[in-house]
Length: 273
Image (cartoon, rainbow, N blue to C red; front, side):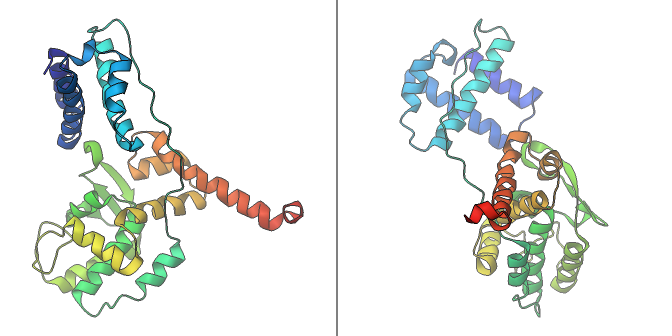
């Protein structure tokens, strides 16, 4: 590992305090390039790096690796390890609307859950919570009951270690209370399996698949879509979702545009001509 790469990893660990997963991803991406080309990364030119990374057919994977390289070059320029600020262009990815469910679809499916057992109450509460909070499934599964204060949710285990506080619908809090009262378990985490231990990601996935036919992340998209359609400001949605960049949130503006297009097609006489 080159000295510059070692300094960069120390910077994102100590100064930027990134999560362990993020640091490991940067390390793997950048070290792979150095080891493959057997040269310090800082000495490589754009053409050499792109030639190596061109083997990645998945553009999202490619862009993640390019992002790692750009972050490294940016660090080297700021620290005066390099006189030039190299920047690699990202591969173009066709933008598609995120999959989401409407409020009616979600509530219709929830009404079919048998809540006569605590398992049914848990499944109902979990789906309602995900849609009411917009939390990532990783954030959801780390939730402790003390993180819920009246109708506010404190998300402590957020992506990139960025905590945030979001409103939580009263109906979601009521559903969680009903589930916990019936479960009879006393555990550190809100969401537990039939043994009383922490619910796993695969179990949460199976629950949303069973009742909605989608992954838990689709409920996060559904949360954001409902807010945008209701007229919420994009920056407010960014804060509620915990996005570090507004660019990430801007995908939901396509929903607004589609709604406007649909309205014109239905209401304007020339659209039917």
